[in-house]
Length: 473
Ligand code: NAP
Image 1: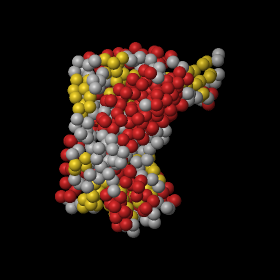
Image 2: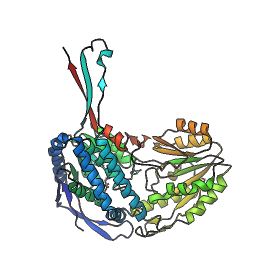
Image 3: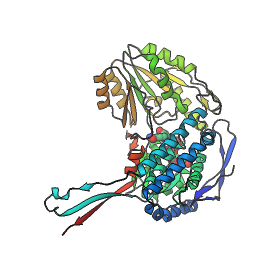
Image 4: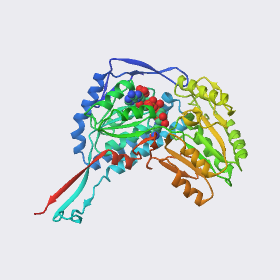
């Protein structure tokens, strides 16, 4: 029950502790460290010391460690899923999916470790460049400061730790305060997998203190942050010349064109809207349906919502459970109330049971409401009627965010137009915006962030290009 910081390959007892509670039942699930500045400093020193070890380690060896980790995690699949469910209230069936994806992510990282290569440069293309040989190599950037959110506590750690090890960087990882157990579990598995001490260090504590310390420390060469736009933007104002990747939030949307077979897409729309209680950065928050099929869509969608099962996240049948904190329940309910007061129609949900917000569907919400223009990060979805796909595209683009967007259409020209016009990091044609597998380039535009994850793309962000020129004379 008592947990430790993980620094220089060892469990370190912290000077301060606090109790960690289950978001679903409120019961105490662990006694977790609250790292001080001094303890965070130890983690940075350990990462600094291990830099040379990893830098000199051949690619096949780094790949081997990542493969070992993937195998060990596969063996402990159920234990890992239980940890995710315990600390985050993610329904167990979804926690199992997250573990399977995490295994995949580390396997992709193992593969990418062997493919880091530069190119030869034809210097003689420029006058004065004759008789020279030039090539680039991609070197590790140094120490990566990785800061992760609560909603995918294992796989989003993997999206930072996997490529960092693949590229020969060391890491100081600060997981979200509510979900440190998954990160500690992985750090210990890495020791078993053969990762040298000091390469991966985990500090747990207050984001605004130790997170800020990591962001500002001059020895840390890159910050890779996944979390809310507010904190991401604040970080970008502090990092100075450090490399920076920001994977932030969104209010992801979908267009449903006329002539779509609604029965075929309802299940995907339900998954997109309510998976992990809507606490997914590409959760489907706004659905724009062509007026020819709007009423049919709404009827079939709400019918399917009523069948969702909510309750204890360890129950195999449960689709939805508690939000991450009572504050989030309160915030989501106040946003629903604002929508109701402004004339929107709450056709499902809107009520709570403990920390569970019932899956909520809202019709006719205007663009200025919080449920529309902010990120709800809760099981709330809006359905609005549109007269054309063009109108839908304009509504999707009318947002400070731009992570992913989806469109269901039978018309190729319409799909091509949407792909061109939607101002987002990824356009998903004939599926919900919530689609993600772990090797695709993933990231947003506008307030949804900068840089891309999806191992190969993170690898390029985590390396420095060095040019070598040989003069033959
Ligand atoms: P959050 O509140 O922004 O926290 C993210 C991380 O930042 C946590 O580890 C947090 O620590 C830390 N932090 C807090 N204040 C900090 C500071 N001043 N300096 C440095 N770090 C600080 O986000 P969350 O509630 O955990 O996660 C939800 C958000 O993440 C949503 O907006 C969601 O869209 C976004 N997200 C984006 C993606 C993507 O790939 N685009 C994926 C998943 C989630 P504490 O826990 O100690 O506060």
